[in-house]
Structures are given as C-alpha cells and as structure tokens.
Length: 511
Ligand code: ZN
Image 1 (cartoon, rainbow, N blue to C red):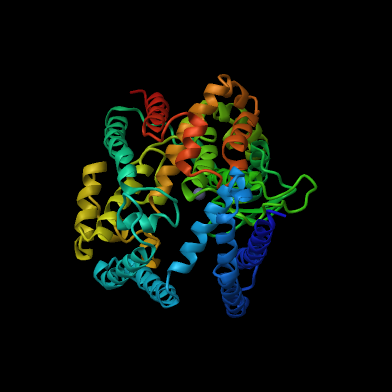
Image 2: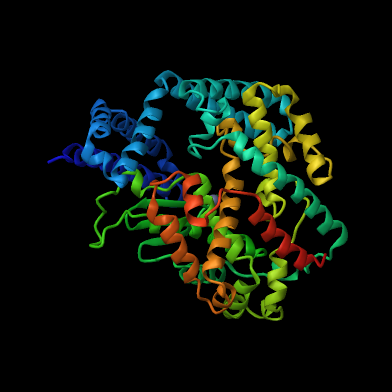
C-alpha cells in the first residue's frame, strides 16, 4: 500500500475543509438572515471554530504526513499527487510560520485600526488614522519577515503571497508600468476628444423584484447552476463556495441604477461558476476524493478575479451580450427601457469617468486606481515612503494619472478599508484579474472565432467550456503563471487588456 500516507493526508485535509465550510456557513448566515441579536453568540461560535480549524491546519500529524509524502516515490511519481503535496507544504509552512502572539496582535490592532479608519474617513482626518496605519504597516512588515523574503523577491512579495502565490512585485511592475502609461493617455483622449454616450439607459427605474428575476435569468445563461447555488441580497455583494454542491452568491439593488446590481450579480456569478467548476464533487454527486485538498481549491485571488471580471466586463459589457440581453430585459424592465436599442444600452454600460473612488470606477480607470495603491503600499513596506507623507504622495500620483486634483483624503488615501486591517499586497490581484481575463478571452476568441455571434444568440458555452478546461478543473495544480502560459501560450502581458479597452472604448467614444 504505497499511498497510505497520501490517503491519510487527504482525509485530514478534508476534515479541516469540512470544519471550514461550517465556519463559512455561519459567516454567510450572519451576512444574510441572522437577526442582529445573534451577533455575540455568533462571534463565540466563529472564534471557537476558527481555533479548531487552526489546530487542524497546524497539527504535528499533518506535518509528518506531508514530509512522508515528500519522501514517497509513489506519490512523487504521480504529477497530480506531487502537485497536491507541494501546495499542502506551502499552506502548512505558512500556517506554522507566524507566532501565535503576532497573529493575535494583528487581529487585535487590526480591529481597532479599522474603527479608527471609519472615524477618520468620516471626519476626513488622516492625522487621526496615521498612528494606526503606522502600527499596521509595522506589524505587516513583521509578518513578512516571519514568512521570509522569497527567492529573487522583496519583503512586499511575502505579503502578496497570501493572495497571489509566487507573484513578484518587480514582475507585476513590469506589466503595470506600460499599462498605466497607456491607459492614462487613452482616458485623456476619450474624455477630452470623444463623445460621451447617452446616460439614459442607466437611469431607467426598475423595481427590485424585476432586477432580481432578470439577474437570475442572466446567471443561468452564463451556466451558473441554481440547483447547486443560490442568489441572496446583502449590503456588500460576495460569492461563497461554501461546500461541494453549494455555492452562494449575493447582490444588492438600487432601483434607479439597475446596472449596479446586474454587473455585481454577473461578477459574483463569475466567481460562482469557478467554484462550481472546481473538482469538489464526484460523478456520483458525493464530495470528490480531492475535496478539501489544493487540487479542488481555487488558484489565487487574481485567477478568481479573472473569472468574475471576464463575465462582468468581457461578456456583460459587450455589444454581443446586449444583442441577446436587450429583448430579454425588455420583458422584465418595462416601457421606460424598451425605447432604447441594444446599442444604446451597450454604450451606456461603457461610460468612462474621472472619479476619485475606486469602487465606483469604470473598466478603464479602475486599473489606474489599483496601480496607484500597489505602488504606494509597496513603497510603505520597503520603507521608502513615510506614513505621514502618504496623502501628499497619493494626491500627486493621482493627478499625474487622471489629471485631476484629489479634493480631500476621504476621497483619497482614506477611501479603502484594506490597509486598516492589514490587507497589504491584496490590491494588485484586482488588476491581475483584469489582465488574466483579457488574455484568456483572446485565447477563447482564437478557439471560437464566431464567439460574438454565439453570445448574441445567448450561447455562452464557449466561455464556460474553455474556462472549465483551462482554469476550473485544474485547481491549484499549476502556479498562476504556469496556468496562463499553458492556457494562452504566453506569459502575462498588458497588451491584451490594452487591445480590449482601446478597441471597445475608442469605438464607443468615436476617437
Ligand atoms: Zn471579485
């Protein structure tokens, strides 16, 4: 029985994953239906579970089994199993490298810093947040030192590794720099010399129930399986790949801006079809043999985001999509919407604006917002940017990129929650997602040259089938960079995203 240790290893991982799915169910319930009176008891339940999960993930037995599998010729001779063990080693080392005292301090200071950030943003008072950010950057640096600087990398890479394994800031910078320069020129040209689309279709009043029904229709068309998933309403939309056969999406509705909910729903459903496509369920409908191991886990945040952004922007904001969706939406949205053409709606879905707030940004300027944060957080971790100088540096870089003055810190460096609780190294995954999506869609188009004709008829299977084969079914078998090379034949570059944005938006703006 050469693979005994491997079988025991997988079953330990599966138990930890099952516990973790219970924790996620509690979290989902808290965000959706739990009465507010349940908060205190839920916190106790969640923290007890978090402790149990951490115990399992750092247990000595798990470490022994991983080591045994690394020595086992039978396991190492099987590329899938070897990849699975490689990824389990990575997770185990990360889980055991941080001293408990540091984990507690990060959680403790992080939750107080988050309160301080909320108050500081409201009062537009950076000085009140500055000491907390100083603390969080310091703690993050300590965390990175515990992980260790990866080969050929820098301290910041160790933090980024939690979200985008094996990524290096210098490689990302090499892709981001040309992207930033060319996007700044594109945005300026569109807004200074182009003709902005009519905003009318964006402002049509659509009752929540109609938006919800249409949203369900769209995600089914994408291939999101409602027998193994559902869609609910929350303040902050999210997707939770809860358990095998159970993927939960949430969205939120604004009756005077249906596109907010529609694109939010398509985005989360993009995450959802990825979760449904991971090999978590066997042919018999039971959890699969690899459930709970890295082979059934999503690759990275950047790859996850490539799936959501792909459906949201490359499908949902395309002319072909609206050729199919417009007559369908007419059946739900009423006469105020019917008077517009598919082309009117497509154009209104692609309005570009110089806005200060990242989460409200359009497809073109969004990446500029992200790249700004990447540059600044990298400099803070390297010690090249003093925390007190953050607002000035933010504002001057923002002006260089978008050509407008930031009016205040609330609409500048205080707008995002991430840094306050130590999410440093997370921002670049948003733009990596867009870059991967663009490169993946060029490959999909190459394989299916009549993609637009198919989507215009409501047939989106080419997108889903390609993603299943080249992304979903692979789990964490390859690194994100390897996955991209294998799927597209090329390393990640800025060119596909630039071609996509230039081609579409110059057409919309007539420049
Ligand atoms: Zn997302």
